[in-house]
Image 1 (cartoon, rainbow, N blue to C red):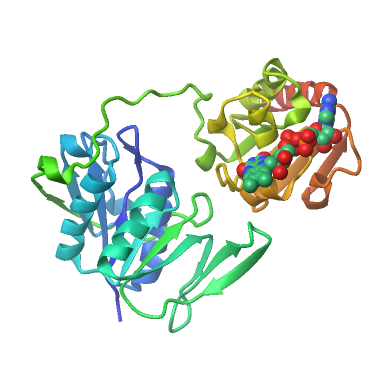
Image 2 (image 1 turned 180 degrees about the vertical axis):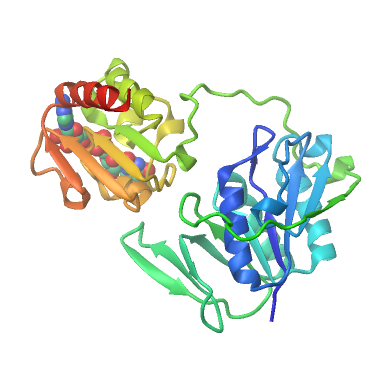
Length: 322
Ligand code: FAD
């Protein structure tokens, strides 16, 4: 029997992030012919036609109180839509907002949650979800015990919807936000310039560790990233040493990424770093120490000085891509 699924769009800078389309793809698999609803929370968000991406109903809550994420205002808006839809499954992105909001509403509603899903199998009677455990060292399969339940899906892992075009019905919903709802208010958001490509959604990441030796040492990595259309990331070693901003940190206490290609430059491969990148589809490691642990998980290893190897790669890719 078809199920009703509610997707919470992942919004950044007033636009839907790519992971929203992956959520819609997963929702259609779980719906099994049922209805896929998507809720867009924000202010003046640019919402494309979502029928083509697998939505049957689009709920839009547009309010100044939702211009920036605050737990209380988003929770209130979400719960309002949840009551109207009464879904069997709710899908959030495993993003900064999803990781905050999903457990909060799951607790409020008394629902179970399966977090950080990287694969789903909806072919059996009950769906099963695969998620990493022990900092990515192992994978486990989990089946929900009861409905409704909440899922968070890791970006870059599940395919977007490729089925037939649907005609999405759009519902605009007004919600009154009063001061007691807004326990916290965002007064100003300062955007940091981190090279433009969103790390968690990047298809290619060029990452630097303590081996880059200085802030200037990141320059050759940035040049390679520019040629490849990649994002620049870093190990905590590089961040702690002050070579780059903590916004770039990948790992257990940083961002979790799953790009198609991860190029680790001057990174030793500590377990805490691997927790954030070991599910990358192809890993290339450049390190002058042939015994560096990063080579144990790398698909391709280059033993050498990154200051020689990286510019050679940049030159070769430039020639190949032009
Ligand atoms: P190092 O371990 O110092 O490695 C530098 C590497 O560069 C070496 O392998 C060296 O051979 C190589 N190298 C040097 N010069 C060159 C050159 N010219 N060319 C090529 N190679 C060169 N770390 C994270 O990354 N992310 C996290 O989220 C994270 N969370 C943590 C949480 C906790 C609770 C703890 C305790 C630690 C955490 N760490 C994290 C830190 C982690 O344990 C390591 O200390 C860190 O990852 C090391 O960073 P690194 O590989 O850049 O530095």
